[in-house]
Length: 201
Image 1 (cartoon, rainbow, N blue to C red):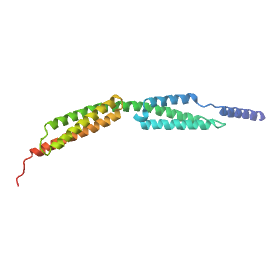
Image 2 (image 1 turned 120 degrees about the horizontal axis):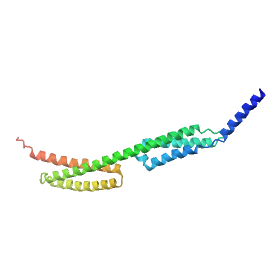
Image 3 (image 1 turned 45 degrees about the horizontal axis):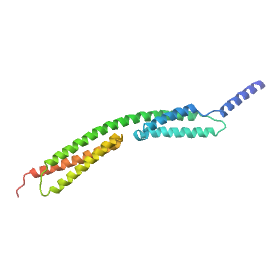
Image 4 (image 1 turned 90 degrees about the vertical axis):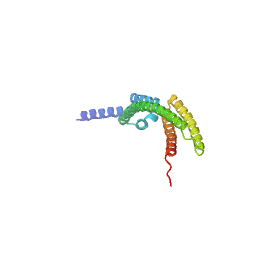
């Protein structure tokens, strides 16, 4: 019996020593950090903010947990490893989603720029056939100036696209399209009003 207790105590001491000498999971840390680096390179904070935030939260939690265990005599890095695995998984997902969102925004921006250009051309064509009256002269001049400004804005949007700032290009193109369409609608309304028969009193 005495010998059994000695063996048990010896095993316990070995286990305690092993726990005390446990080392931080450097391989897991490196793997998780590598995925975070990929997410950063993919600008996941911009293109996949939700997924990136989840990855960063898990990575920060893992770092804090490992630091806490480093300060203990009996170390246990199991929870830290779980958090690192979660951070790695979330970071990989953020990278994937970022790539998909970026590509989709690029396509949307291309379509938006084309639509904006078409809208400006339609507005310019409408102005050429707009009713020329004493009262409408000032309004038409203002519309022409607005179209010139929209052309400049569209050129800036194209520059944003060339710089791979697809979100800004898309937003600017959408704004240009809406304003140009508004000019076309105003001209159409003026034509309709002018062509309407005068009611006799």
